[in-house]
Image (cartoon, rainbow, N blue to C red):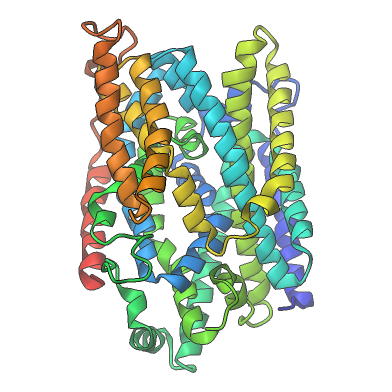
Length: 522
């Protein structure tokens, strides 16, 4: 695929416009006066539209667009469960978790663990998150982004990765979370418009100019196996999405971990002006999640008909973009890069937040705000360099990177969810119980993986989650504090879980829409 002068002009206009916007947003904050609240939490001033857009922009990156589209090519619409169930998960997080986090005044997930348990739990989980963010998330975002740029322009993958890293540094390293969050509204608009255009043109191509309705109808006829939302045990991809377990099992654990207890995501909501703005932002993000399968999965399914002889599933989205006319290629290319850049910047900012405020500040206290902001910038820069170096060795041999990421993080997800759920809502859990849950999550997951390899990883996550709950409770009851309430327990009597009529209406609407989607494609 090649980009002509018009495509390149559109892309250059986007790059320059984004840089100008980021600098303009940060114009009132001098580097001398910027505090850690300003840099890491956008001065706790984000409005609802910035929160919602930033949640989606941070989530929908190369690993989602390239990886999920590849899974759409290989598996079909069933992979959309990650998106549609995430919409409901967001509302659960907004109603039950976010009020506690905002009331505690935290800036990071490790800080909550420090307040609720002790320094040991905070440090262990902070180091874990830094490892996963650098060695799994950031490296995969850069690798898949470089893969997309290479497929569309012909440049070397490593050059594409370097461009993404430098572009991210240019607009986010100075302005911090505020620059990232407020420019994300532009990113999301471009992503949604570009993605919808690609899906429209793909369906029209299948119908040979007869329109998207005819194209979609023909696609369901030519590839009916790609439109099963609940896979049967004889499906070759049952190990990835094991039937009804997707709706009632381990995927809930994965979604709660990602949307509720993941610094990379929740940091946007922690930076809200107030709880009402956070709620509205989460509702906005939840409705945007309904669109994501149309934007991301549908092009992958369409590729089954239009370009069936792909060398690897993750080539689906880049190759589909190659079918677009010039001009639109530039727009869709800009949309893809917009999503990747936003996620790279968001991940880098979260890495710098955890490293600076949860690890470095504990080791080197009583320094100036400027000092910690500069350390945060340096942490972002080092993380990007490390991710660039390790991306190819780690991810170069995987055909479906999205599924790889889900399975790897699934080793630790059950323990994380147990620590937070019990830490939020059960006074009896203590630090020993939390550490036991973290350790048992990795150990039990590895044992199941080795001794029961035919068990789908989503089912494994559900089983390990139950085991971690039992282990955490037993350890807490048997430890020194067995007959006492933990003195750092959350006082739920002081937390208001009341939500507005708009939020409640959105819950009903989303549940009905998703139920209808599953009923249609069961």
